[in-house]
View 1 (cartoon, rainbow, N blue to C red):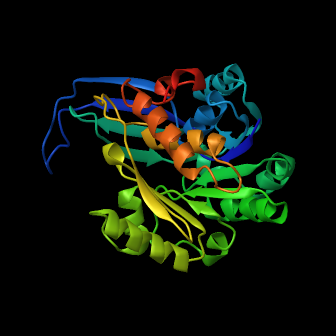
View 2: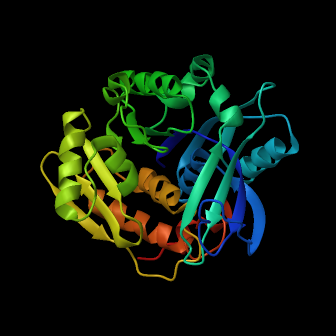
View 3: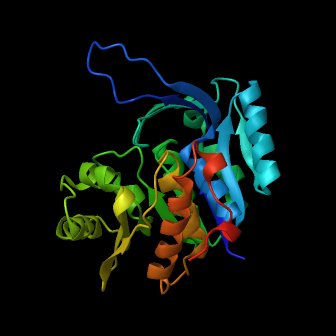
Length: 302
């Protein structure tokens, strides 16, 4: 069984159903609203454990009722949440997810407790990193914390996967030096490289730019089109499975969690793992919500 450690965010998602994004100065009626567990880190960890990985999660929550709900969710899924700690200085993170009538989403994030994770927390979770096959992190937690975790991973031969979301233009070289694989979507890739993703040639150009930053493997997810991959000696595009999308929330997180579980450590099955991850995310988008929509391994039929 593959061992995956996820360092990342825990949010309460506030899902807002809207016909479209409002124009400046416009008041727009919502079609409905709901709340659910979320956060890129939590979503990716739940996807990994549902796909069969032995999963450790490193994160932080506040002291309100939402925090207990998230702890209970992790336990129910069979995840090790020993390193999901509490803070007295901030509330549990929140995400306001606006979903339009086509199922596409735009997200606003309140970091809260996610931004209270410290290097000391990472040191306390060192064993969960050292004993993993790979560690996954996103930018919804402080970057110095990710650097510390990836350094521990690199020192112990643990593969590192960075999901650079929310994207930043200048990723610290100290982090790039300890990152094996990067998985942005097309928007995040453009922010990092300043190269707009329009076709496969522009995806290759993005990958080349990221190789120059020191990354070994690049995957760019492109929504309902599929996902592109590039290594030092090969590249290609894996088409998405065509489905009727209801809500794309957590689709990218499902992809990353599934990939981290199925990918071999030498990347030899990269195409097959990406196909499986594409299939898993195609199931996610057919149901409203984030964590409740993430499928189990038994539901992913190729």
